[in-house]
Length: 451
Image (tube, rainbow, N blue to C red; front, side, top):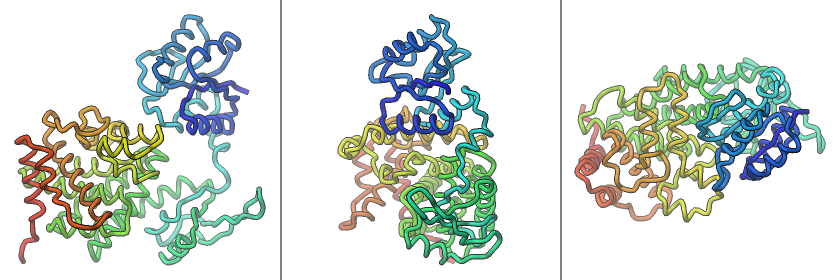
C-alpha cells in the first residue's frame, strides 16, 4: 500500500481527501500539521510515496520548506502543492486551484500508478445518482431510470421507474420532487451518454427559439443554467458542456432582443420559479447589455462577453446560493461564516475568472469582467470605490451587478421601494461612473416601441 503525507488545515477537506485517497487510490494517509512535522517523519520514513500540501500553512511557507528538504536530500518522494508555487522539479505537481480536491485525487492516482480505468472502476458504483431536476426539461430518457429503496441498514434495492425511450410527463418528475426524492439513478455505464443526451436535448430546445411565451423561454434557460453549472463543476469543459453553455448564452441574449422593454424582462425573470444564481446572472446580463447600448457600445462581441461573465461569475456558490448575496466587506464580516466559506466569498471573482480561462472557445476578456465584477482590481474582496482604473465595460458590469443585487434584495424583504439608483449616485461620484449610472436610468425608463 502506498503512503501519502497530507498537510491540510481545513478539517472537512482533510477528511474528504483522506477518505478518497484511502478508498479510491488505495493509500495509507498520514496527516501532519506543518513542514517540521513532515520533515521529522521523512527522517524516519524517507520512502514515503507522496506529500500533499498547500503552498502556505498559517504564516509558514510549508511547500517551500518541504520542497527544499526533498531537493537537498535527493529524495524520490513526489510532491503536490495546492496554490501558487513558483518552483519546478520532475517530482513536483502544482495545482493552482487550492480547493480542487477532485484534481488532487486524480493527480495522486496518476503519480501512484492507479490508471483512469482502475480509478473509474473503484469510484463508480453500479448506479449513478442524478438530481430529479435534470429530468424536468426532458420527456424521454436515453437509459432506464431507477429510484433507490432501503432494504436494510446496509442494502438498497433499485426499482425501475422510467424505461429507456418511453415518454413521461413533467408532472411525474414534479410528483417525485414534491415527495422529497433527492436522486434518481441510472446505470453507471450510461453516465457519459446521459450527460451528452441531456446537453443535446437542451441545446436543440434553446436553439430552436420556438417559444410560445417569454416565460416559457426563461423557464427553459433557468433549468439549463442550473444543469450546465453542475456539469461544468463535475466534468469541466468538454464538448457537451461547451455546447450547452453557448446555447444558454445565446438564448439569454435573444430573450432581451425579442422583448425590448427591459422592465418587463426583469419582472419576468425575478418572478420566475428559479434560483438566485440564475436570476441574478440573467438580469445582470440584461441590464449590462442595455447600459452598454445607451453608451453607444453596440458590438455583438461585447454582448457575448457580458452574457458569459454573467453566466460564470458566481459559479463558486453553486452549493450555497445565499453566499452570492454577500457583496460588501461589512456583510462578509457579519455573516458568521466558517473560514472556508469566508475564503470562498472573498476569492470567488478570481476563482471564477481562472475557471473561465479553461473554456477553449470563450470570448476574449470575459475573465477580466468576472475578476472585476465587485470592483476589486485583483479579484479578491469588494469595491473600495476606486474603480476608475478598470476598463469601461467592467465598470458597466459592476453597476449592473450591484443594481440587480439591490433589486433582488428589495424583492426578498418587501416593504417600501428603495431608491437604488440614487444610492448608486451617492456611492460612485466620479464622472465616468456617473455617466454609466445615467445610462442605467435611461435603460429603466425604456419602453417597447409602439407598433
